[in-house]
Image (cartoon, rainbow, N blue to C red; front, side, top):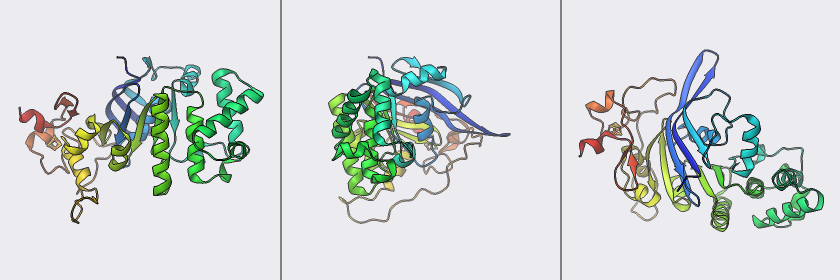
Length: 322
Ligand code: SF4
């Protein structure tokens, strides 16, 4: 089966004047049709840049290595005109902050009808009817009123629903959702997550769900990819990864999570800091924080290896155990 999204060895370099950093060092990611693939990790681990690379939204020249294929088409070498056609039709993004993602001086209805018109060339009443239907499908009450509203006139939850309607308006096969519920309160966030899942099950599109919250990934995702310092350190089916983590970093993330179903305990914290994105590190990027590090970890970067049928981890321990 060909993948909806295949990222192989993606490396992203950002240049500011003479300063150069590599916040994405090596990311591999695959998403199949109907899959909800979580991309989890701390702030600055390269999650958002990986999402932006999927839509060809990185500054020109910043992809230093690797490939990004959406529905079999290489994004990293696409010209801007072809990219515009790809966005919306094949892949769309739900941004973290809907308030800044919408054009503030254009009504929601006008922004929606514009995208719908680009997809099926409908105009006037037909485009308006389709836009109202999209707003209704994301559970927005009074869609006619929302059509005439400007972004600042809607609450955060309503705006995020409108953003999902906008992302789905051209019926893409893949959605990249970048921390779409971070700015919402807990109850509204849960409703928006449920909405995304319901729509995904109805329409069968694939999702890249970017989050720093492992509980959120467990709630929504079928598979999970754990990022650390711009590399994928572990990936596999969500229950396997979160119930029996193979990588010391995933274990450390889980140990730092509060649990309501277990006796109260002091939460573990991870000492040390993530290597800077402009630092040259020869060995494992996690070695300075890893309680299980040994000599080899300091000078040799571990490669991603299968730890069972469905799962991979980038850690020397797995090789040493064989
Ligand atoms: Fe820890 Fe070594 Fe595995 Fe890196 S390779 S996660 S330092 S044990």
